[in-house]
Image 1 (tube, rainbow, N blue to C red):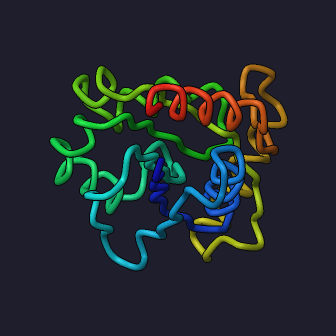
Image 2: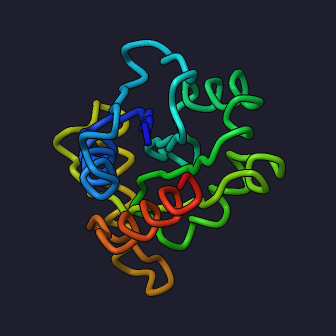
Length: 166
C-alpha cells in the first residue's frame, strides 16, 4: 500500500505531525510531500492524508486549492484531513469554515493533532497577535489553549486510513 501525506507547515509542527503519521502508517510505504514543493501526482497512491496548520481559523490556501483541484481523485480513494492548531475550543468552527460538506462526507476522518505555540517562530504581526491572544486568554477560563501534539489522535487517524485502504 502506497500512502501520500501532503502537508503545509508554517513553524514545523505540521511537518512533525506528518512525519509521526508516516511512522504510524509505516514510513517505508509513505511519501511525505510539502506543498512548498508544488503539487504531487496522486496516481500511484492507494490513500492520502492532507494536512495543514490553522492560523486564525483558516488552513493554508494551497492545501484548500489542492483539495478542490483534486477532489475527484481524493474522493475515489481512502483519504483523511488533519490539521494542527492550539485552540481546542475552535476545532469545530475551523472544520466547518475550511471544508465543505462533500469533503467531510468523503473523508474517512478529519482530525486535529494539537499544536505547539512558539511565538519565536512567528513573524512580526503574527507574533504580536499571538502574544496579545495569550495575554487575554489568561483571564478567560473558557478559552482553552493546548500546547501539545496528541500522539493518540495521530495513531487513531493512521488506523482509520490504513484500515480502509486494505
